[in-house]
Image (cartoon, rainbow, N blue to C red; front, side, top):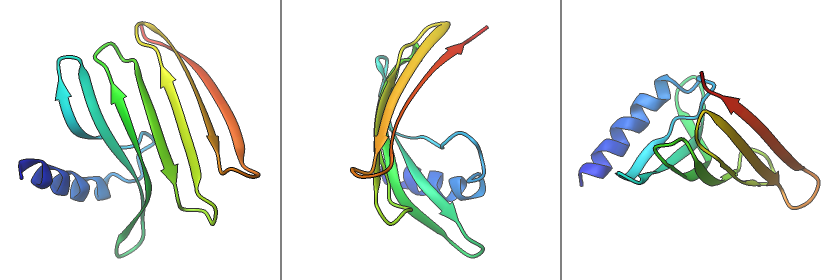
Length: 113
């Protein structure tokens, strides 16, 4: 029950911060090994908000993690998955596809100092 209340409160709070560059991650479960989160794809309008898919992921204390998600804001849904390593120099990679025309690969390096 408290998870439902937390998720509802977080969703309401998220509507005010929907313009942020980073997706808002709502924790589902957490322990010393890491946390499982859901990051809904929220598109605010003048009077309401629409959720068009979400990303589910795992994030560990060292910064490493994995994710899988879907975006239904376009006529053809786009699916994505990826992973990243942890530490001061983190490597990340991912793929996305709608199964037809929209396909992509992404990679990156994050240096923490």
